[in-house]
Every structure is written in structure tokens, then in C-alpha cells.
Image (tube, rainbow, N blue to C red; front, side, top):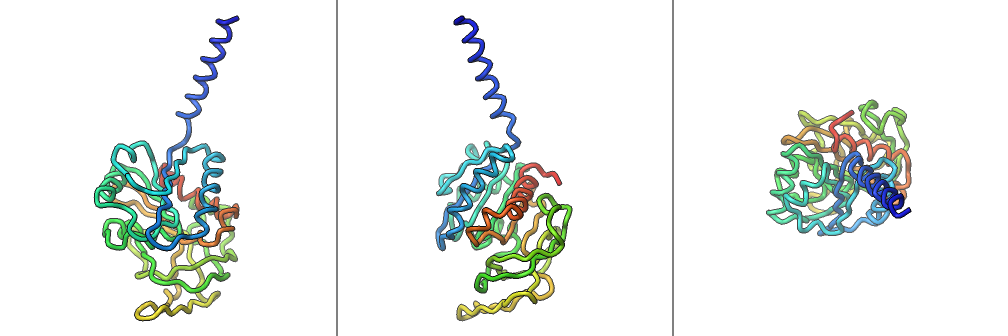
Length: 253
């Protein structure tokens, strides 16, 4: 009887180890801020944890990024930065993140990740379009530019959406960048005036919202969506977000 019990326990342990090792990939989610704290972050954490269970990947969450080291990052396939703001990494951590991407790994930025680390050129080049200003939250029409990209295959060509649409310091198309979502500026009021040079001008006929590209040996995906807390309960958004995470982690489309 004891021998049978021992065999059963060994089988269970082996199955558990296999399951843990069989997970698709490992993701590290950082939500640290050195500026504005988005309310939606508190919805994003449980939503991403549920998404990880649904799609069988490991997700570790750090309320504070520090310390990030080469040894720590080596455990992961993709780094998620969700609503981070300001300067959240030390110089040493910046170096570790650079080497992480250069080793062939992935990065995903959500919403305010483009309002982060303005003085770190490597990072701003990876993001591609850095936040400048935004109007009030409102409804507009999103347009799918690459319907075959993971997470967007079930989206219509145009989608009614409510969010906080960023105007970037430079919104022009960049070589090597692949744009999957844009917003139709004619469908919402771009007006915003924060004083000085912080006056909204819009981007005209092409206003990027989500994009991806290969970068410095690795992969980077960004989506401007994610300001409204309830969006993290919206299946279409979670499909879009997981598509970016999967591509950044695996390099597959």
C-alpha cells in the first residue's frame, strides 16, 4: 500500500513539473510609476493573471521594477510594461533590459508605457512614438490596418471604441514599424491645451494606436489602448493585447 501511495505521489509531482515546464512562455509584468498612477492598472493586473491562465503562460507581477538584473530577466521571454510612467529604471536596470531584448526576447508596452523613460534613447527608439498630450476620454472609430495580426482576426475593419487617445511627439510612420491599429481623428475631438507647447494638433489622416517591429535583436509591441479600467474586461481588447504578447514572446504570427 505504501509503495502504491509513493508511486501515486511521484506521478503527481512529475505531472505538475511537466505542466509548469510545458507552459508556453514566461512574462514579467512591471507596473511601477514615477508619475501619474492610472486607475486601470488595478484592473489590468487580475485581467492579465486570468489571461495567463487562459493561455497557459507564466506571469509574474512586480509593483516595483527594481531590482532588475540580467539573472532575473533571463528567466523570462517577454517584459510587459503596463501604465508605467516617468523614470522607473536605474542605469544598471536599463542595461539589463537592453541586453534582454538583444538576446532575442520581447517587450510589450500598454498605454502609458509611451509616457516612460523619455531620456533613455534606446527605449524611446524601441517604443517609436512617445506621448505628448491627449484630449479627454471619448468615443472614436478605430481602424484595423493589419487584420491578420494575432488578436485582430475577429475584429471588424472599423470598431467603435472609448479610450484616451494619445497624440505623440512624432506620429509619422517610421521605417520598419508595422501599424495594426489607427484611430480616425474625424470621429472625435482632438482638442487639448495644457499650456506652453502642450497644445494638441493631431496627426491627420494617419494616427497610430498600436504597432510592432523587430528591434535590436528582439521584438517590441505597443498599444495605446488601456486607459479606461473597464477595457480590461473587454474580450476584444484582451484578444488584441494577448496577440501582441504572444507575438513578442514567440515571434509568431
